[in-house]
Image (cartoon, rainbow, N blue to C red):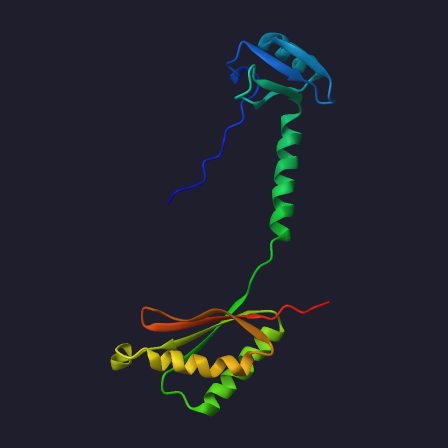
Amino acid sequence: MSRKKETRVLLNEDIKAPEVRCVGDDGTQYGIISKNEALKIAEEKGLDLVLIAPNANPPVCKIMDYGKFKYQQEKKKKEAKKKQAKIDVKEIKLSVKIAQNDIDYKVKHAREFLEKGKHVKFRVFLRGREMVHPEGGVEVLNKIIPLIEDVGVVEKKPHQEGRYINMTVVPKKEKR
């Protein structure tokens, strides 16, 4: 299980560079000064010295309230997460030997899901000898396509995944 490596932010005494380009919280340019001088300025203001550009020459540090900065970053992350669209996928299972009235019934449900803006995944399960002739499953899914064309678009054409023939349908985009 690999996790995204978080880059650790260097603060105050953890900064190793002897000289830094220092910027104040309010935008004040202190220029290139020694790390100790920058730490002294930060301490006087009751703030932290934060390394923001370690690869610059000399490294760039900013005098700021690190706790407040971290809080703002977390807030931005949460806002971005809220704005992400969650896609709801409904799955409809079929078999190769399905009767037309059963197809109509399942398509009726699929149409309802698509009208509500949900994605629909049709799956045809292949039993026993049906694995030798997966075309039967593809035929069943091809019968469905014309029945849902007015409300949905086939995103993934019928394809085989193990014992299933899958097809994904997404709702049509409304023109405004």
